[in-house]
Image (cartoon, rainbow, N blue to C red):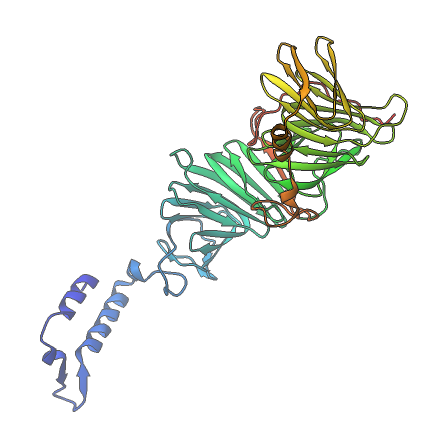
Length: 445
C-alpha cells in the first residue's frame, strides 16, 4: 500500500470505529497504532524509504537544500554514506573523498562540490571548511559562502546568473568570478570588494603583516594612514585592496572608487589626501634627498608638503596639463578630462604647462589650466571654493568607527587581498589607470 493510499484509508470511518477488541484476547488494540505498524512493514517489504523521509539533520526547520546528483562512493553526510536525493538541513556536514562530487540545489542557486571538499549546509548558503566549490546564483537573493577568514556573496548581476569558484586550503583561499559578479569581504577589511567576471582574488592569512607584491628593491614611500573604502593599490601585475597601515612603494598606483578616499603619510612627513574617483601614482619619493615625483591622472589631491631645504630638492605633481612644483605648501589639485585646477592654501606653487608657460599661485588664490594649455587666473579663491576643495578630500571621518564603511585608523588588515586578472584588460573593479610615464629606477641616489 503506497503512502497516499494509507493516509486516505486512515482518514475514513467514524470515530467510534477507531477501537475494537480482539476476539481471541481480552486486550484493546488501537487501529491507528496497528495501521502504522502495517505502514512500517510495507516500507520494509518494499526495501526503500520514501523520499520525504530522507534527510540529514533532525528536520526541526524547513529544508535548506536538496541533493541533485552524487558521483563516486566517498560522499558522507554527517559521518555516514550520503543517500541519493537526500534533503539537507542547516548544520548538515558533507565530506567528499577522492573521485567523488556532489551537486546541491538551494532554491535558485546551485553548488557543485569537488573531491576532497568539506562543507557545512547553512540556511542561506554554505560554510567551506576545505576544498573547492563552484556556485551559480540565479536569483535576486544572494547566496553566501563563508570561510575561516573571508565571506562571499553571489547574486544575479544585470539580470543574468552569476557564477564563481571558491578554493580553500589551510589559511589560503582563492575566489574567482566566472560570470556576473561576486562580493568578497576579507577579515580586517570593513567593506566588500566586488569581483567582476575574469577577476580572481587571492587571500593569504598565514602572515598578518605581510605586504603582497613587495619587491626587495622597491623603496618604501609611505603608508596608508586613514581610509574610506574602496581604494586599490596597483603594484606591478597585482591589484591590492588597500587597508589602513598598508605600505606604499615607489611606482605604486593608488586608485579610489566612487566613495573611496585615502590619507597617505609619506616618509618625509608630507600628508596626501586622495579624493574619490582618483588615480595617483607614487613615481618616486626619496625623503633623504628630497626628491619626489607624483602623477595625478584624474581626480582630486590635497597635499601638505614638508618644507624643502636641500639644494636641488623638488616635490612635483605631474598632470596631463602640466607640472605643479611645490615647496612647503598646503594645496589642492583637481584634474578632469578638460582642465586642471590648482588652489593654494599656504605657501606658493609654480605651475608649468606642457607648452612651457609658467604661473606662480600664492596662498588664497587658484589657477585653472585648460586642456589646450590656456591659463585662467591666478585669481582669488572664494570661501565656498576653498571649503569644497577641502571637504572633497577629507578623510577625517575614517579615524573612528562612526563613518559607515570606514576602516578605523591604526588597525591592520589581517588578510591581504590581492586581485588579479585572467585577461589583459586594464580596468580592475574601481577604475582605469593609464600610465603617463614609465617607472623610475628604484636605486636610491
